Image (tube, one colour):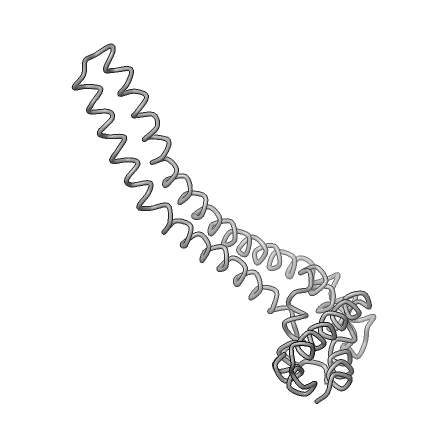
Amino acid sequence: MNKAEFLKELKNKISDMPYSEVEKTLSFYAESIDDRIEDGMGEDEAVFCLGDIDAIAKEIRVDLPITTLIGKKVKQSRDRASNKTLWIVLAICGIPFWLPIAAAFTVTVLAVYFSIWAVIISIYAVVFAFAFAAIGSVLAGIICMFTAGFYQGALFIGASLCLAGLFIMTVRPMFWLCKKMVRLTGTFFKWVKSLFVSKEVKA
């Protein structure tokens, strides 16, 4: 498959998306192919390296705003209905049923999303608490040396060294873990959005 064939097929598969999104997507992939060709690849090889076109089309859809995806899902359902007037009447009459379900789904998704971020913030708080406690212990130790005696001050300074050691030991794993959890939120949100993407990609 050459560049023109790839872009034509991709445009066909995402033609039901907003026009601006289609144009931006085609421009991005055309530039990606051109960059690979400039790096020495053949045109067919450059297209092949982009991957499966159906997977690309699905990924593009998942990257759309969730409100757009929900709107498209509703529009598809309405367009497939044999009697659109009946569909509208049933949709309105069904509000007492589907609205609580939609609200519960939204609340559940937000609860999971914010729970992950709460864990990330808690990890940051615990690790940096070691650093602040170490600084506080040093200051307390210096004050105690002049007010309560050398040994009490030395005890506080020793505690500050232990806290500083804990901070140094945990700060790098904290960044690694938080990075993974941030990716997890992205993966989770993509999964939620993928629920609104049709399994059948337009041929």
